[in-house]
Amino acid sequence: MASGIDGGGSPSTRPVDGSKEVGRWSRPTPPNGSCSRPCGPKSIQSRGARCSTLTEENRAPSGAVILKQGFPNDRLCFLVEGTVVIERAYPGGRKEVVTTLHAPAIFGTTTFFRTTPSTISIRATTDVRMLTLDHPAHERLRRTNPRDSEALAMAVVRVLCERFDLLDQRVSDLLAQHANDQPKVTEWSNFRARLFEEPIL
Image (cartoon, rainbow, N blue to C red; front, top):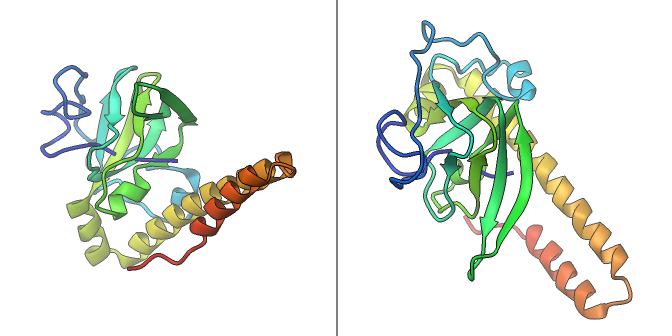
C-alpha cells in the first residue's frame, strides 16, 4: 500500500532515504531506453502503459530504506524484482509492519500525486530492482503519449481501489468481531464514514 524516493537529487548520488547512514542506489545504464521486464504490475503492462523509455532503472540492497516516513516522495516505483516491507513508526519508538509487497508491485502512489509527506516507510527485505518515474518524466508522458498516460493512471487507480476495498473489508470484519462493544463499533463506524467522505479539493 504506500510510496518512491525521498528528497532531491538523482538516485545514483544521494542516500535512499535522505540520510547518510543508509545505503545508496545503484543505477545501471538502461538498455537503450527500454527494459526486458514489464515496467510495473501486470495490470499496467496489460493496459499498454509502456513507460520504459521514461523510467530509470534502480537497484537497492536488502535493508535499504527506499521511502522514509515523514519525507516527501517524488517518484512512482515499479518493483520488478525482490520484496519490500511497509512499516509505520509511532511516537515512543513502536514500529508496525503494515504489509509486504512482492514483485511485481507498485508503490509511492498516494505521495506521488499528493504533495504530502509519507506516513509510512518502505524498506527492502531482499536486493531489489525497480523502475522509477519522476514528475518531469510523468509530465512528458502526459504530453507525448496521452493514451499510455491514461493507462498508467487507470492502473494506479485500480491498485488504490483494490487496497481501499481491502481496508473496507477489514473494517467490516472488525465491526463484526466487536458487535457487542459499542465504543469500538462507534470508533470503527466513524473511521469508515471518514473514508467515504468526499475530499475538499
